Image 1: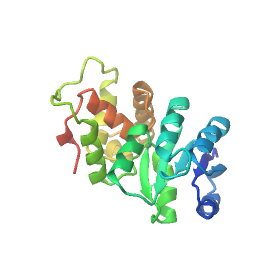
Image 2: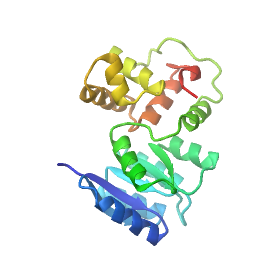
Image 3: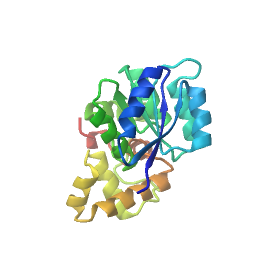
Image 4: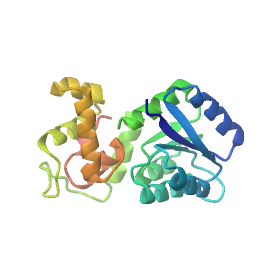
Length: 223
């Protein structure tokens, strides 16, 4: 079984140690390293090439927002998951717009964190729907006209567009599989194809990309 390779980034040693102990009990998760700030996170991501980087927002030196930007620039396929004590709108928007696949608060349970790691690896969102809608609204700020038909830039297949539209409507992979009467594995394959064609690594990024291209209306997103 191929393990999910995880890098932990937090300036509090005790929190890193506690999270590491939690994750090391999971047979399919391997904590490959730890970093105490954003600069170390970028360096270790390039060196270790983890599947998922779990990072805090507020850290000395380089913060989590700047670290996420650099990680996504250097290794676009790397998934970044924020785990922080701050729920400020500016942090949420900045992290997700920098390319983070999800945003969790540190009061989540261990099971929720483990579930979130598996979710982002499968392309599933780990955001509350209300937060997702606020993020999408921010992404659409300044654009007054939204077309109802896909733009000429659209290089997704008809089935990939169906999958993405259902994702925009808040459906998870299992629900999409049931609605389209296809296997879960097929949905995951379509998601990977969508990510590759849009040059993104998460569902949140894919939806933002579709909105910016005018493929969807904000009313399509559940609030």
